[in-house]
Amino acid sequence: MPPNAKQTLYNTLVDQLDALIRGEGNLIARAANTAALLFHSLPELNWAGFYFLADKQLVLGPFQGKPACLRIPLGKGVCGTAAGRRETIVVQNVHEFPGHIACDCRSNSEIVVPIENHGKLIGVLDLDSPQIGRFDADDKAGLQRVVEVFTAGIEADSA
Image 1: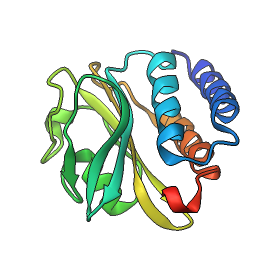
Image 2: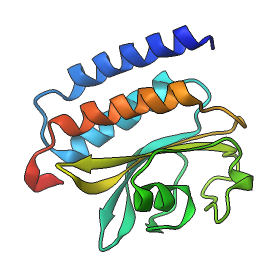
Image 3: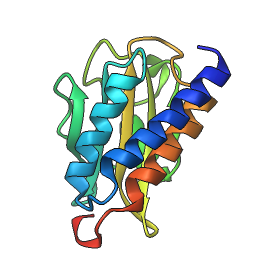
Image 4: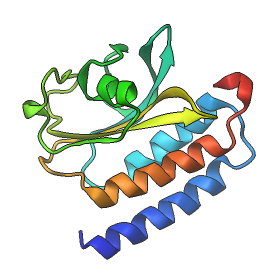
């Protein structure tokens, strides 16, 4: 996909997501629609979803794709590492990532975006692809914008 086309796709996704979740403050409802929108809109994905922080570990939230790992310790795997560092991690080949947790053996690349609400880590957005090298800087920027829209209207008591 040409870079400009990818940026246009993310602009459209951000607008669609805002329209889908605006006015809904519940974390789970917002996450369910966000995961579905991403999974059905972005090409070459085999998993899109959320893990939320609970008891110092990441716990599976709403997602689209095959069943996934239920809990991931902070600092472990791509999700736990991104959460622990509070930074987006793009992995071109998950088989080369030390400590990668394989929930679906078809996954070959991954991007994980931490989710913070008022400075507090609440979880991560995780996308997997069967294609090596699927995610790039445009995906990173686009998905960080998606997370900004996602967190903008979360009710304080649901995060």
